[in-house]
Length: 389
Image: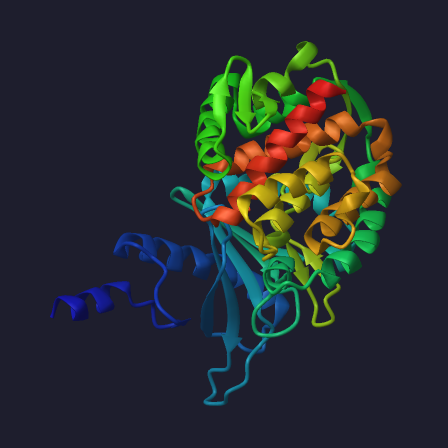
């Protein structure tokens, strides 16, 4: 009887058909989100396809690590037929995050990012402490296929297809708009990802725990020892010399991980999604974020000692990485930075981005040991390169 009552409590309203299990934790949460989804779809889907009003089929998609709910919403015929209308994607996020994404879309995405590279925003609604955004559905097939899907399958071909075309286009729009030179790249990352030095240092304590586990790291004055190699504290390396490193600031995606790169059936870019963090920032940030996605998702098999060595070769741009598909994928991303944004003139700021993003991801709880070990090793080697150059 209890399970039957729970099932009735979580049941969607009559005009919504939920496909699969309910993703909600409480009846109140389910009620609020169903109401918000209905509100944003009422106007949005009418503008997309007003020939199929009435019932909506709702399928849960991944919301990544943002804590948002993402659904595929498909209007169904109400005349007894099995016709389906044009689907849409609905994202339900915390109010501040959803409101920020809508503002970023209106300011940076709609006017600056060409239509083939973005979904259309058809609707926006708020209720209580949540916001809903209704986008056009991008990608081929029943579910969007992302670059993460292909990386996890060991397929690097889409990465090599996306890099030249996408970043060439972004260089023509976002990355060329309002470029300015600023000082203090490390302070930029510490404020963006951690808020302050205290929070960053606390996160580095987590990183050290993983470094001790994977690489037998030992803490010493000024840093860590792994075998015969001395690594500086990452926060100290980032802020070395008072952090006067200049960096190029421009418009960027802000969270260009592989979850946010949607592909078509051929493995080429269908669109970028998730604009909560879109705005002004370090020109190399999107590429460094994409590096982190390869570290997290590509299933290269290696022992922890090999991981530390491979990340050393990557950090030093050593020719010995040839033949290692994982390392060459990272090299491909850096070659894009080199061709498009003069990486060689600002290599230190790129290493800052890699170290800061690796440190930030220590807060993630869904990483494999191999992924976390790569991120730890990349952050350590980037910090070491920073203090040596």
